[in-house]
Picture 1 (cartoon, helix red, strand yellow):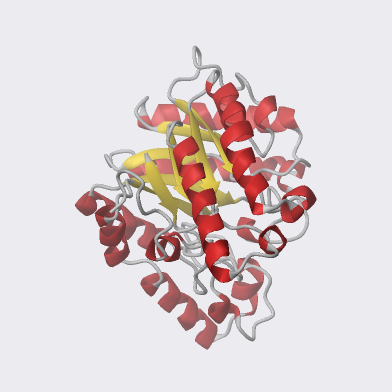
Picture 2: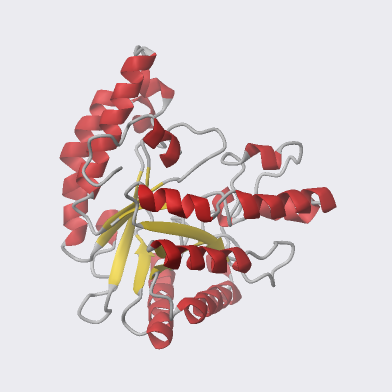
Length: 335
Protein backbone atom coordinates (compact mmCIF):
# COMPACT_ATOMS: atom_id res chain seq x y z
CA UNK A 1 0.00 0.00 0.00
CA UNK A 2 1.48 3.31 -1.13
CA UNK A 3 0.54 6.45 0.74
CA UNK A 4 1.46 9.98 1.73
CA UNK A 5 1.30 11.92 4.98
CA UNK A 6 -0.94 14.96 5.22
CA UNK A 7 1.54 16.76 7.43
CA UNK A 8 1.23 20.43 8.33
CA UNK A 9 -2.56 20.37 8.09
CA UNK A 10 -4.27 19.32 11.33
CA UNK A 11 -1.02 19.42 13.30
CA UNK A 12 1.03 22.50 12.46
CA UNK A 13 4.77 22.59 11.76
CA UNK A 14 6.23 26.05 11.08
CA UNK A 15 8.79 24.82 8.52
CA UNK A 16 6.02 23.31 6.39
CA UNK A 17 3.77 26.38 6.30
CA UNK A 18 6.05 29.36 7.05
CA UNK A 19 3.54 31.91 5.74
CA UNK A 20 1.09 30.96 8.48
CA UNK A 21 3.72 31.54 11.16
CA UNK A 22 5.30 34.66 9.64
CA UNK A 23 5.57 37.42 12.20
CA UNK A 24 4.32 35.30 15.11
CA UNK A 25 7.57 34.07 16.61
CA UNK A 26 5.67 30.90 17.53
CA UNK A 27 7.75 27.70 17.50
CA UNK A 28 4.74 25.39 17.62
CA UNK A 29 0.95 25.15 17.50
CA UNK A 30 0.51 25.71 21.24
CA UNK A 31 2.18 29.13 21.20
CA UNK A 32 0.51 30.05 17.91
CA UNK A 33 -2.95 29.44 19.36
CA UNK A 34 -2.15 30.88 22.79
CA UNK A 35 -1.02 34.21 21.37
CA UNK A 36 -3.31 34.42 18.34
CA UNK A 37 -5.58 37.41 17.80
CA UNK A 38 -8.67 37.28 15.60
CA UNK A 39 -6.66 37.77 12.42
CA UNK A 40 -4.37 34.85 13.29
CA UNK A 41 -7.30 32.62 14.17
CA UNK A 42 -8.95 33.52 10.87
CA UNK A 43 -5.71 32.67 9.07
CA UNK A 44 -5.60 29.31 10.83
CA UNK A 45 -9.19 28.59 9.86
CA UNK A 46 -8.43 29.44 6.25
CA UNK A 47 -5.38 27.19 6.34
CA UNK A 48 -7.41 24.21 7.56
CA UNK A 49 -9.99 24.81 4.85
CA UNK A 50 -7.62 25.27 1.95
CA UNK A 51 -4.33 23.43 2.59
CA UNK A 52 -5.95 20.04 1.96
CA UNK A 53 -9.20 19.70 -0.01
CA UNK A 54 -11.14 17.09 -1.92
CA UNK A 55 -9.14 18.07 -5.02
CA UNK A 56 -6.00 16.79 -3.29
CA UNK A 57 -7.62 13.42 -2.58
CA UNK A 58 -8.69 13.21 -6.23
CA UNK A 59 -5.18 14.08 -7.39
CA UNK A 60 -3.61 11.46 -5.13
CA UNK A 61 -6.00 8.77 -6.29
CA UNK A 62 -5.35 9.62 -9.94
CA UNK A 63 -1.59 9.40 -9.42
CA UNK A 64 -1.33 5.93 -7.89
CA UNK A 65 -1.62 6.72 -4.17
CA UNK A 66 -3.82 4.37 -2.15
CA UNK A 67 -3.83 5.83 1.37
CA UNK A 68 -3.18 8.90 3.48
CA UNK A 69 -1.72 9.07 6.97
CA UNK A 70 -3.27 11.96 8.88
CA UNK A 71 -1.51 13.39 11.94
CA UNK A 72 -3.88 14.63 14.65
CA UNK A 73 -3.36 16.09 18.10
CA UNK A 74 -5.01 15.25 21.38
CA UNK A 75 -6.86 18.54 20.95
CA UNK A 76 -8.66 17.21 17.84
CA UNK A 77 -12.08 17.37 19.51
CA UNK A 78 -11.75 21.04 20.47
CA UNK A 79 -11.78 20.61 24.25
CA UNK A 80 -8.13 21.48 25.02
CA UNK A 81 -7.15 25.13 25.44
CA UNK A 82 -5.58 26.99 23.77
CA UNK A 83 -5.67 24.66 20.76
CA UNK A 84 -8.38 24.89 18.10
CA UNK A 85 -10.22 21.62 17.38
CA UNK A 86 -9.94 19.94 13.98
CA UNK A 87 -12.48 17.11 14.03
CA UNK A 88 -14.72 18.76 11.43
CA UNK A 89 -11.87 18.65 8.91
CA UNK A 90 -11.10 15.06 9.81
CA UNK A 91 -14.74 14.18 9.18
CA UNK A 92 -14.44 15.74 5.74
CA UNK A 93 -11.29 13.73 5.05
CA UNK A 94 -13.18 10.51 5.72
CA UNK A 95 -15.94 11.65 3.35
CA UNK A 96 -13.38 12.41 0.63
CA UNK A 97 -11.67 9.09 1.26
CA UNK A 98 -14.95 7.23 0.81
CA UNK A 99 -15.62 9.09 -2.44
CA UNK A 100 -12.14 8.42 -3.84
CA UNK A 101 -11.45 4.99 -2.35
CA UNK A 102 -8.39 6.09 -0.37
CA UNK A 103 -7.67 4.49 2.99
CA UNK A 104 -6.85 6.53 6.09
CA UNK A 105 -4.31 5.79 8.79
CA UNK A 106 -4.75 8.07 11.79
CA UNK A 107 -1.62 9.03 13.71
CA UNK A 108 -1.73 10.59 17.16
CA UNK A 109 1.11 13.08 16.71
CA UNK A 110 0.43 15.28 19.70
CA UNK A 111 -0.03 13.97 23.25
CA UNK A 112 -0.40 15.88 26.54
CA UNK A 113 2.92 16.79 28.08
CA UNK A 114 4.59 15.98 24.73
CA UNK A 115 5.94 12.51 24.02
CA UNK A 116 9.08 13.79 22.27
CA UNK A 117 9.46 17.54 22.77
CA UNK A 118 9.29 18.20 19.02
CA UNK A 119 7.14 20.84 17.32
CA UNK A 120 5.05 18.14 15.68
CA UNK A 121 3.84 17.03 19.11
CA UNK A 122 2.03 20.34 19.40
CA UNK A 123 4.42 21.85 21.94
CA UNK A 124 8.17 21.91 21.58
CA UNK A 125 10.51 21.62 24.55
CA UNK A 126 10.18 19.31 27.53
CA UNK A 127 9.26 15.63 27.18
CA UNK A 128 6.69 15.12 29.92
CA UNK A 129 4.07 12.68 28.64
CA UNK A 130 5.36 9.85 30.81
CA UNK A 131 5.58 11.91 34.00
CA UNK A 132 1.87 12.12 34.82
CA UNK A 133 -0.65 9.26 34.80
CA UNK A 134 -3.33 11.75 33.77
CA UNK A 135 -1.50 12.37 30.48
CA UNK A 136 -1.66 8.68 29.68
CA UNK A 137 -5.36 8.56 30.56
CA UNK A 138 -6.14 11.57 28.36
CA UNK A 139 -4.24 9.98 25.49
CA UNK A 140 -6.20 6.75 25.83
CA UNK A 141 -9.46 8.68 25.98
CA UNK A 142 -8.67 10.47 22.72
CA UNK A 143 -7.77 7.19 21.01
CA UNK A 144 -11.04 5.72 22.27
CA UNK A 145 -13.05 8.66 20.90
CA UNK A 146 -11.33 8.42 17.52
CA UNK A 147 -12.01 4.69 17.38
CA UNK A 148 -15.66 5.22 18.30
CA UNK A 149 -16.17 8.01 15.78
CA UNK A 150 -14.69 6.22 12.76
CA UNK A 151 -15.16 2.54 13.59
CA UNK A 152 -17.83 2.08 10.93
CA UNK A 153 -15.87 3.70 8.13
CA UNK A 154 -14.52 1.17 5.65
CA UNK A 155 -11.78 3.70 4.86
CA UNK A 156 -10.16 3.42 8.30
CA UNK A 157 -6.96 1.44 7.76
CA UNK A 158 -5.63 1.77 11.28
CA UNK A 159 -4.91 3.97 14.28
CA UNK A 160 -1.35 4.98 15.20
CA UNK A 161 -1.06 5.05 18.97
CA UNK A 162 1.70 7.61 19.55
CA UNK A 163 4.00 9.16 16.99
CA UNK A 164 7.75 8.91 17.60
CA UNK A 165 7.82 8.70 21.41
CA UNK A 166 11.17 9.96 22.66
CA UNK A 167 13.85 7.87 24.32
CA UNK A 168 13.07 9.67 27.57
CA UNK A 169 9.83 7.69 27.79
CA UNK A 170 10.60 4.44 29.65
CA UNK A 171 10.06 1.38 27.49
CA UNK A 172 8.07 -0.37 30.21
CA UNK A 173 5.60 2.53 30.45
CA UNK A 174 5.30 2.69 26.68
CA UNK A 175 4.60 -1.05 26.43
CA UNK A 176 1.85 -0.76 29.04
CA UNK A 177 0.32 2.10 27.09
CA UNK A 178 0.49 0.19 23.80
CA UNK A 179 -1.30 -2.78 25.33
CA UNK A 180 -4.00 -0.67 26.97
CA UNK A 181 -4.60 1.21 23.73
CA UNK A 182 -4.73 -2.06 21.78
CA UNK A 183 -7.53 -3.48 23.92
CA UNK A 184 -9.40 -0.19 23.84
CA UNK A 185 -9.41 -0.23 20.03
CA UNK A 186 -10.35 -3.90 19.92
CA UNK A 187 -13.30 -3.36 22.26
CA UNK A 188 -14.54 -0.53 20.07
CA UNK A 189 -13.65 -1.60 16.53
CA UNK A 190 -13.26 -5.36 16.64
CA UNK A 191 -10.38 -6.97 14.78
CA UNK A 192 -10.62 -5.23 11.42
CA UNK A 193 -8.84 -1.98 12.35
CA UNK A 194 -5.07 -2.18 12.52
CA UNK A 195 -3.33 -1.09 15.69
CA UNK A 196 -0.16 0.73 14.67
CA UNK A 197 2.68 1.27 17.14
CA UNK A 198 5.99 3.09 16.73
CA UNK A 199 9.45 1.55 16.94
CA UNK A 200 10.64 5.06 18.02
CA UNK A 201 13.75 4.69 15.83
CA UNK A 202 14.82 1.52 17.65
CA UNK A 203 13.78 -1.25 15.23
CA UNK A 204 15.79 -3.98 16.95
CA UNK A 205 14.18 -3.47 20.38
CA UNK A 206 10.50 -4.04 19.65
CA UNK A 207 10.28 -7.67 18.60
CA UNK A 208 7.10 -9.28 19.89
CA UNK A 209 6.06 -6.30 22.02
CA UNK A 210 2.55 -7.01 20.82
CA UNK A 211 2.91 -10.71 20.05
CA UNK A 212 0.86 -11.67 16.96
CA UNK A 213 -0.50 -14.74 18.74
CA UNK A 214 -2.09 -12.56 21.43
CA UNK A 215 -2.51 -9.20 19.72
CA UNK A 216 -4.27 -9.46 16.39
CA UNK A 217 -3.80 -7.20 13.37
CA UNK A 218 -0.96 -5.14 14.81
CA UNK A 219 1.54 -3.23 12.67
CA UNK A 220 4.89 -1.75 13.65
CA UNK A 221 5.60 1.69 12.21
CA UNK A 222 9.19 2.58 11.39
CA UNK A 223 10.39 5.95 10.09
CA UNK A 224 13.30 5.78 7.72
CA UNK A 225 15.28 9.00 7.51
CA UNK A 226 18.98 9.31 6.67
CA UNK A 227 19.24 13.07 7.03
CA UNK A 228 19.15 13.85 10.74
CA UNK A 229 22.28 12.17 12.14
CA UNK A 230 25.77 13.61 11.88
CA UNK A 231 26.84 10.63 9.78
CA UNK A 232 23.84 10.99 7.50
CA UNK A 233 24.41 14.70 6.97
CA UNK A 234 27.95 14.16 5.73
CA UNK A 235 27.39 10.91 3.79
CA UNK A 236 27.67 11.34 -0.01
CA UNK A 237 24.52 10.67 -2.03
CA UNK A 238 26.05 7.54 -3.56
CA UNK A 239 26.59 6.09 -0.09
CA UNK A 240 22.99 6.87 0.87
CA UNK A 241 21.93 4.90 -2.17
CA UNK A 242 24.14 1.94 -1.27
CA UNK A 243 22.90 1.95 2.33
CA UNK A 244 19.28 1.99 1.10
CA UNK A 245 19.64 -1.07 -1.11
CA UNK A 246 21.96 -3.09 1.16
CA UNK A 247 21.41 -2.30 4.86
CA UNK A 248 17.82 -1.03 5.02
CA UNK A 249 16.27 -4.25 3.62
CA UNK A 250 18.07 -6.27 6.29
CA UNK A 251 16.70 -4.02 9.04
CA UNK A 252 13.15 -4.10 7.72
CA UNK A 253 13.08 -7.81 6.97
CA UNK A 254 14.33 -8.55 10.48
CA UNK A 255 11.43 -6.52 11.87
CA UNK A 256 8.95 -8.23 9.58
CA UNK A 257 9.73 -11.61 11.06
CA UNK A 258 7.86 -10.47 14.16
CA UNK A 259 5.26 -7.95 12.96
CA UNK A 260 3.83 -6.56 9.73
CA UNK A 261 5.79 -3.39 8.92
CA UNK A 262 4.83 -0.03 7.47
CA UNK A 263 7.31 2.73 6.75
CA UNK A 264 5.12 5.48 8.16
CA UNK A 265 7.50 8.28 7.18
CA UNK A 266 10.31 8.65 4.66
CA UNK A 267 11.42 11.18 2.07
CA UNK A 268 13.93 11.83 -0.67
CA UNK A 269 15.44 14.73 1.28
CA UNK A 270 19.21 14.80 1.75
CA UNK A 271 21.44 17.28 3.51
CA UNK A 272 23.15 19.73 1.10
CA UNK A 273 26.51 18.30 2.23
CA UNK A 274 25.51 14.95 0.71
CA UNK A 275 25.16 16.66 -2.67
CA UNK A 276 28.40 18.66 -2.53
CA UNK A 277 30.20 18.87 -5.86
CA UNK A 278 27.16 17.99 -7.97
CA UNK A 279 25.63 20.42 -10.45
CA UNK A 280 21.85 20.86 -10.50
CA UNK A 281 21.25 18.12 -13.06
CA UNK A 282 23.36 15.57 -11.19
CA UNK A 283 21.69 16.55 -7.90
CA UNK A 284 18.30 15.88 -9.42
CA UNK A 285 19.41 12.51 -10.77
CA UNK A 286 21.01 11.55 -7.44
CA UNK A 287 17.87 12.36 -5.48
CA UNK A 288 15.67 10.63 -8.02
CA UNK A 289 17.79 7.49 -7.74
CA UNK A 290 17.63 7.70 -3.93
CA UNK A 291 13.87 8.16 -4.07
CA UNK A 292 13.28 5.26 -6.44
CA UNK A 293 15.58 2.93 -4.49
CA UNK A 294 13.55 3.60 -1.36
CA UNK A 295 10.28 2.87 -3.15
CA UNK A 296 11.64 -0.46 -4.38
CA UNK A 297 12.67 -1.43 -0.83
CA UNK A 298 9.55 -0.20 0.95
CA UNK A 299 7.23 -1.77 -1.64
CA UNK A 300 8.26 -5.13 -0.15
CA UNK A 301 6.79 -4.10 3.22
CA UNK A 302 3.10 -3.86 4.13
CA UNK A 303 2.85 -0.19 3.22
CA UNK A 304 4.63 3.16 3.15
CA UNK A 305 3.74 6.85 3.52
CA UNK A 306 5.88 9.63 2.05
CA UNK A 307 6.50 12.65 4.27
CA UNK A 308 4.79 14.71 3.22
CA UNK A 309 2.20 15.26 0.52
CA UNK A 310 3.00 18.96 0.19
CA UNK A 311 4.80 21.88 1.77
CA UNK A 312 4.55 25.55 0.90
CA UNK A 313 8.11 25.65 -0.40
CA UNK A 314 8.07 22.35 -2.28
CA UNK A 315 11.33 20.45 -2.65
CA UNK A 316 12.24 16.94 -1.58
CA UNK A 317 9.87 17.00 1.42
CA UNK A 318 6.91 17.42 -0.95
CA UNK A 319 5.63 14.30 -2.70
CA UNK A 320 3.67 16.44 -5.12
CA UNK A 321 6.74 18.43 -6.09
CA UNK A 322 8.89 15.30 -6.42
CA UNK A 323 6.23 13.76 -8.64
CA UNK A 324 6.22 16.89 -10.80
CA UNK A 325 9.99 16.62 -11.15
CA UNK A 326 9.62 13.08 -12.45
CA UNK A 327 11.32 11.36 -9.53
CA UNK A 328 8.65 8.63 -9.48
CA UNK A 329 8.67 8.21 -13.24
CA UNK A 330 9.12 4.63 -14.41
CA UNK A 331 7.97 3.04 -11.14
CA UNK A 332 5.07 0.68 -11.73
CA UNK A 333 1.72 1.93 -10.45
CA UNK A 334 2.54 5.65 -10.49
CA UNK A 335 0.73 7.78 -13.04
